Image 1 (cartoon, one colour):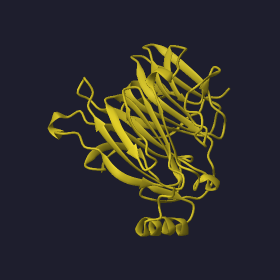
Image 2: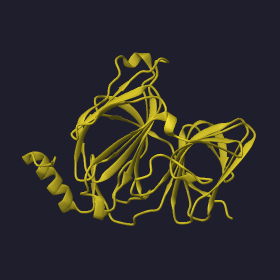
Image 3: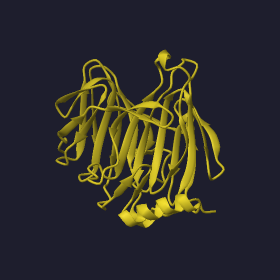
Image 4: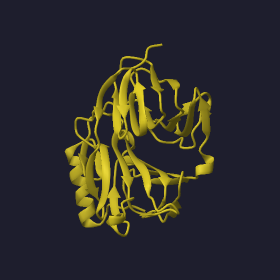
Length: 280
């Protein structure tokens, strides 16, 4: 097997979203669709006491995507136009398929440590499913399997490792999404099919990814020149590993909507304006 090389490293940019939430954003939806089927990756934290009361994401719409929120510390209170309400706590996952349209609200809350810390991933929906029925699911921390492999401790959110599957199983893109923590002086190798998009978001420590040092906080983008990912570390490293097969469809992103044509975006805006965006 051949280890993939690194194409480039992304330094996250600070952006403000929602009601003044400061995020570290590595990728965002673009018509170029370079990270197909992945559209956005945000790293959020509210750990500076000078920020004052924690801010959040008041009610807003989505169409044409799936979102996966993974909490490390703190919690997020959620409610949406489907009638769902819930609290995503430390180690929990929230998965939402916006499909033809959903309105939802996410309001983070500090945990006992005083911190709020987590990630949100947007995954595209193919054209045939962009107007599908919206769905929502919460996954508790206790249902996420932990896999020990070659000095790595893996929390497997989605996908399969050594015959073990993560609990988020119905994302259309069928991605691999996992939290990987490598012990000092360890080496980790994971087979990933050729042709799949592969990203690694390093958020603690540093490691050699296919021979290139990647330090926190940054995202490594892999070339499509091999069928496995290889990571080594001296002092320890923790990263989110994301992989999936591209849909290879054109996209037109517009804020919280990702469709395939300009006309579909125009129709979405018209429905928001005339009150037909949410369908029962």
